[in-house]
Structure formats: structure tokens, C-alpha cells
Length: 476
Image 1 (cartoon, rainbow, N blue to C red):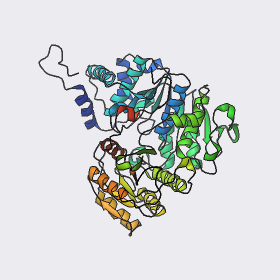
Image 2: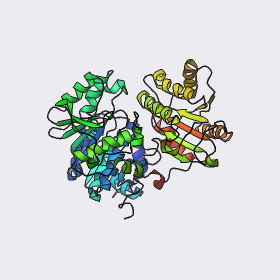
Image 3: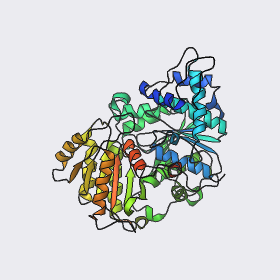
Image 4: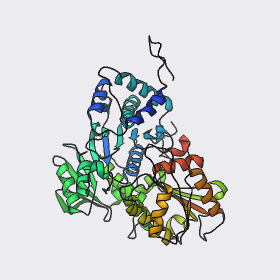
């Protein structure tokens, strides 16, 4: 794909190098560059409707479940998400499959050529890939696309997509210097994805001020609250009376064994996605079917690794995400019948990027360690990605403050950290493991850490990373 510019002695930068060079521009907030480029590209985003999803946690998983649900209904569905774990092609999927690298290269060439027209436009890495997704979805002829925001909502490049349904997942404190220093301000930024005349589906927040901000943003739209604790849908106009509840006919039903006061995270997100499919007028399959068909790499991902060691990886990357993960794993440990599994880690590998409040971030991790009988904690520093990691030594200082007696190893190199964790697992420190597996390693924190580990464990092929594992469209 290395091309020489026409009528020029100057050799153009290889297209993937050009894409990587976009990273130096950093994060850009605003829609002007994206809108200008969409116009130059002949408005590819106007050729298919979108579902636009924002939130602090769960938006990627919800997007994956919704895209798969719509595919299983017989639609060709594009999915744009970020960031990627191992390959940039993960950001653009069609019916669960990563796009062909040649497709991406063609789209990038078109973008680079038109961005150079006067006046030239400097695009960020994220803007470039969003534009590429619009080109590819149009060329492929998708029936619909599911679009995940990058950061916030109001000024995110994805705000330019044509959405007939918007979704808000959990809202928590994150990126305070950009989105605001309060939940209300953050909610205001994210809820700005609402479109006049379109529907909005939002997860019910217990903070009344946050609810008011979301309802205000949805002024000229039809809004619905999703209450996972009740498995019901409520109108913004009357949050006291459910407009739709759990019923077999809605295709919402999940196995009763999964709802006994605790809703597993994957099912919680799948339920939100199922209600979204219903609002789109689809007749989705059972939530349990969608969950069984969906693999969202790096999110509660379980597999057998080298030496028959069991791995569980999750990129819980902020305090609320790690808190929810901790609650989930503590509940699961006490339920041997839960999916036929009962496990406790021998070692936990942990690494993270910079946080607004490191102490708040690490508190649930320490709580998890205590609940799991203090497995070895291996602190490391993810290497991939643009965001610098928290140094392993700084993490150690914080962990020691919360849990002086913790067994901790500091191994900044991720490969070495993995080796240390696997050696601990092979020693068989725990008495309860996955069926047929000797030893268990968990890994949490930065998405970049999970990406590094998937590559080291040879779980980074395009096939490994596809999100829909069973569909009539995958064999075509």
C-alpha cells in the first residue's frame, strides 16, 4: 500500500505510519474537522441510521450486545468502538468480524488525500478512524451502525453520526479536567448525544441531579429509563409507572438462576441492549442467546492459557468499573453453581493509566484481594497505547497504605509480570480452580495492559477478537 504521490518526487509516508502519526495530535474536542471531512467524503454517514452510545462504563459491552442482537435479527450491522486491544481493525466491525486491513487502508488513503486539500485539515487518530468507519459502512451497505463515543458526547467526533436512538450507560466521575468536576456536569456532556425527535434510552441513575440533567438534554426527544434492578422500562415523563416490563414475548427473558438479587454484569448490559432493540422495532432473540453468542475481548474474558492455567481478564479502568467488577467476582466466588464454575485467583496482574484519584481506584482492588484470601498481586506498567501508565512503584505505595500485609511483587515489564503470575498459579496456591485447569490468574486495569497480555498469551488473532461467535452471517 506504499504509494508515491502523483507527479512528485516525494515518497508519501506509508499509510499505516501516517495513521500512527495522527497520535501526536492528541485528543481533539469539537465537530468542525469531522463535519468538513464528511462533506469532502460525500457524506457517507447519511446512508444508514445509527445507535449512538455514551457512558462511563459498559458502553462498549452494551454496543457489542446490541450490534450482535441486531445481526441475529437479520440485519447487516456495523460497529465502531474504541480503543482497540491489539489491532486497530477491532474498532470497525461488521456482523462481529474485524474489517479486512485492505478495507481500512483504502479508507485511510481517501481520508489522507481529501484532508490535504486546501484548507488542509489536521485530523486526530480518533477522528480519522471514525471517518474510516463511515466510509467502510457505506461501501459495505450496512443496514445500521452502532457507534460508541470516544470521550464525553457533546464534542465527540461520533456526535456527527445520524442517530435515531441514543443510549446512556452508567455515569461516573472520570476525565474531570475535560468533562467537569461533578456528576451533573459529566452527565450533561454525555447526555448531549440526544437528538431532537429521536428516542433516548438511559440507565437509571440514583442521583436525582444526574437524572434531571439527562431529562433536560432529552427535551425534544422521547426518553426512557432502564432500571436493571427491576428489569423494567420507564418513560422520562412518568418515572413511577413502567411502560414495559419483563415478559417472554419481548425476548427479554433470562435464565431465572441468574437473577436472585444479583444481575451479572454481562446480562445487565445485554438487557439494556435488548430493550434498545425493542425500541428500534426489532424482535430480538433471548438475552441469554445474545450473551452466549457474544465475546467482547477484555471484558470478563475467561480462557485456558499455557500450562492449563485459567485466565480471567477485564479492563476495569476507573473506580466505578473496578468497584462493579469486585462486587461481581465476590458474588461469583460464593456461588459454585454459577455457570458451573467456582474459582479464586492464585495471582492478580494489575496495571493502570493515570487516574484522577488513585486511592479511590485501588480501594476496590484491595477489597477484592482480601475477599479472595490474599492472592499474590503483581504490579506492572502497560506499554501499548498513548496514555502513560502509573508507575508500579507508585501503585505499590498506595496498596501498602490500604493493605500493609499484602503479598505484592513489582514487575514493570508486562512479560515478566505475566511469568511471575503464572509461576504462582502453577504452584497451586488456591484450592478452587476452573474445571480441568491448574491454577488461575486474573488481570485487571488498563485496556492497554489487557491488550499486552492477549498478545503475550497468543489470544490476539482476528478470529480470537471477533465479537460474534455464532451467526448465519459469519459463514458468508
